[in-house]
Image: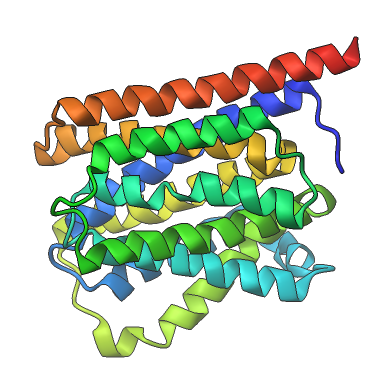
Amino acid sequence: MQQTDSGAIRRGILLMLLAILVFTAMDAAAKGLLQTYPVAQVVWSRFAGQAVIVALLLRQRVPQMLRTQYPGLHMLRSACQLGASAFFFAALPFIGLAEATALADLNPLLITLGAALFLGEKLGPHRIAGVLVAMVGALIVIRPGLSVFSPAALLPIGSALCYTVNALITRRVGPSESYWTSLAHGALFSTVVLGVAMPFVWQPVATADLPLFVLVGCLGTAGQLCIIRSFSLAEAGAVAPFAYVGLVFATGWGILLFGEWPDLPTVIGALVIAGAGLYVWHRETRATRTAKR
């Protein structure tokens, strides 16, 4: 199993937090677009923007970065990345941003369990406690039995499953290949696959909406770059619980952009989630220091 020092763990966690902030901003922008445009078009713009940005940054190095020792894993990872975005975006016209984020935030628990089962990472009691406490916080926010549990709620859960496989594959190939390879493969795969559907679903884009489409592509690229680098630096089980902080960010975007003020249970749940993430970070850092001594 790969040993990760405390500095790499801290950088991985900070990159995860940045990725979640950027991704929730992208989700908020997408929610606005989905009131007018079909899901496939908005998802395609997210990955087409990523393809353009990667091509501009890499230029002549694109063919080099597309070469990989793991073509099958990259195809599966790219398909799961596409599925995670598509399922989540498809839910946004039907349920609130904070509720969709809460349901999708099953993925840290799934990642921690998957990392132990498939990557050989340690699954200690403190990691388990951290993700379970964060899950309690998520349940406080969504309050099972209320309106959030509609058929549309299955879509963010599907997103969580896809994201979990994506994250585990990223962790598997990350240490041995450039993160640009994962970024390029994900962009190319999704742009081509969804591009086939564009002639059948495309709606003309209003001039006023063009900046939002561009923003979705830029934010998606930045978030994906941060998250690939995060899982390459630190164990999946160490950084995964911090994805729960996305609930806090999503609530903030909901207030700023849609006037969706959280009620008291949402605030309590968000505090529980953030506390669980900080607890795991503290335990990981302390355990690493103790091992070095």
